[in-house]
Length: 158
Image (cartoon, rainbow, N blue to C red; front, side, top):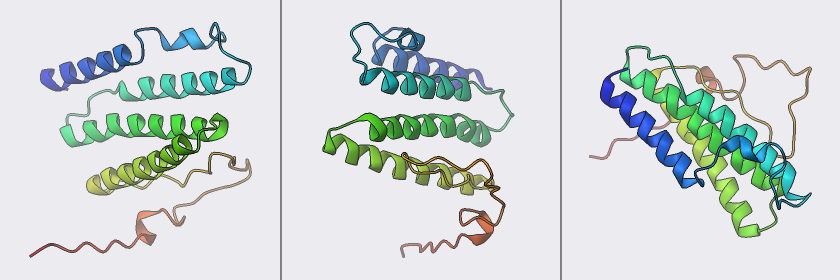
C-alpha cells in the first residue's frame, strides 16, 4: 500500500476512535457501567459490529488502489449496516429507526456500486434486521442480486 494511503487509513481509523469517545470498543463487552438491561444487548451487538468492521478495514495491500479502496470501504459500509440493524432491533425512536433504514439501503447500494465498478460479484442479499437466514438456505450465483441477473439502465447526460 502506498505510504500516503496507509497513513490516510490510519489517520481515519484513529479519528474515528477519537470521535466515539477515545475508549476501547471492548469496554462495552463486559456490560458497560450504567447500561440498562435493555441497552446491554444493543451495546454488545454494536461492539461486535465495530470489531468486525475494524478487523475488515485492516487489509493486505493488493497493489491496486481501486481494489484496496473497495476492500477497505466494504467492511466500513457493512459496519454501518450492522449498527443500523442493531438500532432497528433495539431502538425506539421512530426518527432514528427511519434513519437506520435509510443507512441500510444507501450503504448496500454503495457496496453494490463499488463491486460493479470493479467487476466483482455482488454480495448476497442480507435478511432484514428482524429476520435470520435459515441454516439450510443455499444461495447460488443465480440469486436476484447476482451480476448476471441485474439490469442497470445508465443514461449519460448530453
